[in-house]
Length: 234
Image (cartoon, rainbow, N blue to C red; front, side, top):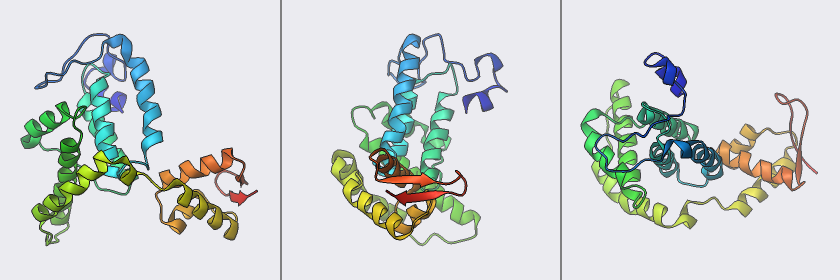
């Protein structure tokens, strides 16, 4: 992502880990030394698939953004990559984009700066940006916005805090999903992951994660070509 857009700005640093110390404008946070970047990025890449489908989508997207910015692996353009990753996470979960306008920069930096100690305000900030972006999309399509977004935000604040502070409420019931998948495959041999996701009403990342576990445990197998095959119980 960084190489794609930054090559038009500074080709020599496009997609290349920084070798100097940097800072976030408007933030007092100390960023990792250059030599720590490869290991931190490796941990980040490992963390993402382990938590996608477990965390509430907006919280997951906010944490992806926060974790990447805290690593700050490039000399410039880190915020843009962080927002691209955040919006990719939202889109993968079936949500709309979260556009952060310049007028919100102070709140954006302030809540992000405190996110390591208290993530809830940053999650609410991203949640609000999703709501505002949806309103703009509705206006572009010529539709009226009948929802009282302010009241919806106020009512949702407690739910956001609960999700952030109580991981049990954010997690998928693994046993239930596993049993639903096994039953679906047994009754409909040859179904693919996207079809199974629709069949049991779960996200594709969640279904893919459980399918991988079931295959590793010898409960199911994939038969046929990658594009035309499907899953069968053993």
